[in-house]
Amino acid sequence: MQLEKYFVKGELIPAIVQEKGTKEVLMLAYMNRESLQKTLETGYTWFYSRSRQELWNKGATSGHLQKVVSISGDCDDDTLLVIVEQTGPACHTGSHSCFFKKIKDFAE
Image (cartoon, rainbow, N blue to C red; front, side):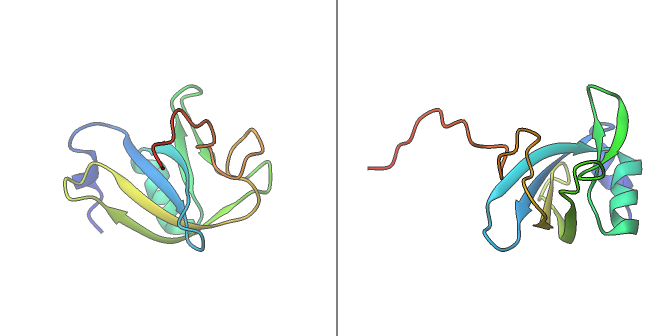
């Protein structure tokens, strides 16, 4: 697999993580070449922490692992969609998804 095309625009690529069963968006994180390669090799998500400037395996300390089902690139090769089977909450706050802070609901 040619990974270089995903890093033409920069060293990091956003990775949207979606739960297979519920289709819920769980989180957004960033991958570099090494974390994407480790994800492909292990079948579990690895990301690059921009704040700590290091690789991290999602769930390695909490046990809330993300088993990868599939990875797709978008039409511009600058964003990844990672479908996972989530064990436990995805968010470090304990919430199932990181997207729990509603700003406005436009539903009638």
